Length: 166
Image (cartoon, rainbow, N blue to C red; front, side, top):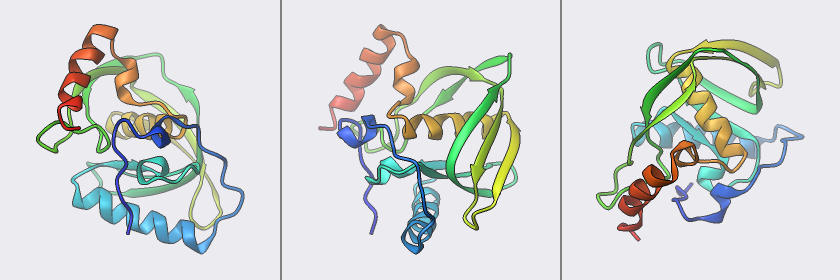
């Protein structure tokens, strides 16, 4: 059974290795990650969040409920328009055990390439929430958290809420 890694665990700050072979273990893990994401009312989950330092993630488009299983995802272009929206993370929890939130500015559109679970190359232009989710989750694969986009003062205020849990 997979276990969620929480803020402060070094696995969340480590750059993940490329997946060189799609194994039955990776496919099983991705299925478990989808279940975990849904059970925690999340919209995305990256491998390091469950302690695996490999470049794969799962995410859901909240509007269509389409689930993407992305192996070696890469954002190949970012749109020029940005938008500030509230973000949280299943690995960044407050004292109440719920995600803490902060406003983060990101590009509104991206083009992403990935390998799907069957080994087929995929590409999609995403905008709105799906674009935000894929940016958030691919950041995890590079050891980056949404709090890294905050000013030092805002980050410290947010992290005080997180630290209370420990």
